[in-house]
Length: 118
Length: 118
Image 1 (tube, helix red, strand yellow):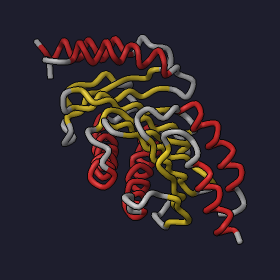
Image 2 (image 1 turned 90 degrees about the vertical axis):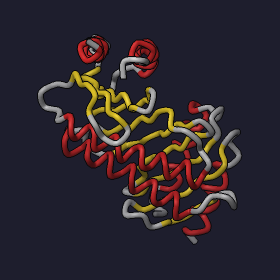
Image 3 (image 1 turned 90 degrees about the horizontal axis):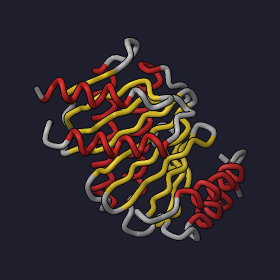
């Protein structure tokens, strides 16, 4: 089943050093899959995705930025990555010292694997 | 006057290859200074800042991410950088091929220069 396969792909991202977990959220906020630690509410992740997409849409409309590709929010205690996959947003929650280069590499593979499953 | 000095610092960021312009927005959306090209509405930039900060606050509240440091939104035709400076957000609008390393370097200097002026 594609749901199990999605979960498997998301779980595999946890093997990256510093990654707490990930979720895939449809652009209107529906949670399509998640592999998050117990202290993270998937609904909170979905709410963040819709806010980031709103900011991006505003940018597209007013600043002619075109289609959303990805975003990163860095805070004192962690970073959150948002990446577009066929109209959905793959969200990764990581520690401040997680290496973006490694995450982006694995993210590319995960994105490819997710295509057609969503 | 500090307003002129702020404008000067923001104008200096335009010398970076790929940077269209910048603005400094107070966290509730007040525009404290801007050096933007004519096709960019400062109010639209302010609206984006409030949305990004909302997403970040959500992250802080629910995922214990702590204080907002910075964010990047990458789209098909450009990228927008948001960076915290003493309760304000310095926003830079750039092309897709603008080098983040160089921008971050100049951003550090601009941030230092802005401190105490805001």
